[in-house]
Length: 600
Image (cartoon, rainbow, N blue to C red; front, side):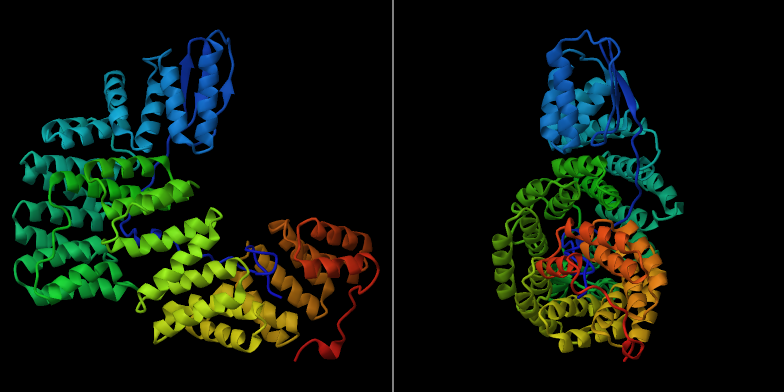
């Protein structure tokens, strides 16, 4: 039967889509942190960016053991993602080396990443004295200035930050909002203008220019900025809502509806747009996206943090998200982003805590609960996850995603009959199937195949291919299933060859190629493909078993037994374990497929 990385018998792990992550819609750029070196008395210790491995080099260890022990314990905690504990330990080390710039910087970043802004601010002030251009310290202090209403001070701090990496985008955004808060709106617009010329920044520049102009009362400039942004690529949710808000306040209801429709055309789901759409339909004004310079600065921090988070959970994403929450506490959009950042760093328990705090009245709550269910399952709380999704399925009979996520979690936990029932509900709720729904049909097909309902499964796979003709996951799963059943072998081979061409580094798809060659009697070429598959996925029992069978039929019996034993050591499912033991005991050994049975 088909197999995958999700279990020893499914070929492709397809977990529930990251619901909260799907909400994060504005782009940006990433940055990296260079390693630095900090001296603790007579010790020389290499520090990498927080969250990354570092190397300790002992020169002359004359400091007290407790200090050095705290430092090493802090590094261990940090590597494990325990930033709060790491920060506490480094605060203790700072008592011994209070003016060490790198140690201050590291401790400040860890405190800020945990949302302990009040503790981070004094360290940022000390860092500013020691290193006036330090980006994180100045940004933290600028946020504190904004919270205190001192926009001029915030602008001056940001002016000294070097515009490299992420700061090419973030610093102009933050400075523009600080300038606007100080009543210097023209300068704010001048600050943002050059961003429009940078590849990938035009949409975000237009959004923030429009928001600033709107707050300044210049509706024409705001409208022009929004329209320019909308013409530079996919329309983000925040832009559509900002446009609708401006137009609704001017009583231009048809144009407000058109702005929202432009977002709908590009998106598969408009659930988060519903509050604005409902307001426009009732001829009620749509609330502003931001109502102050502080909220505008929070919006800028979120925009950049979101982009960094897509690039792999950089600690910078965590810091900027925490600073945004300091400016705009309990904001559901920012809380959703924080949960996603924490989850990307493997901190599901922290993400769960944040998701549970999101206001139930917010439209973000629906997706937050869906994401919460996924994280509960990931932390071993399967029954709680299923109960939550069952409740959600009953609450909103017009929504598809809760039923689909329920099906995914049941499938990934081998409860295939129940998964089919959940997927059936999701398909019924979709109504008219289109290209967006290929994945739903594909995953239901997997559950049906594992439930021994091949007729329905095959229909779903074929329908998914009608919607996405070259989708490699579907090509592979259906092709492999046909190979296992001895059906349509020539067509299966062409399908799997197409999948391999698209994903040559996928060991499971390469295994399918080897297995179809095996079924067609081309054992030598099958060995070549299966050896490559094992090199790509060395721990998969089915791939090792397949290679053992191919070795046996080309006369490499010792290597065949080695692969079968290796498969046994990779925790195969019970039925496969029994088959392998039979072969190792000399019974049910592989035999060449008769030529007349190699296709149908």
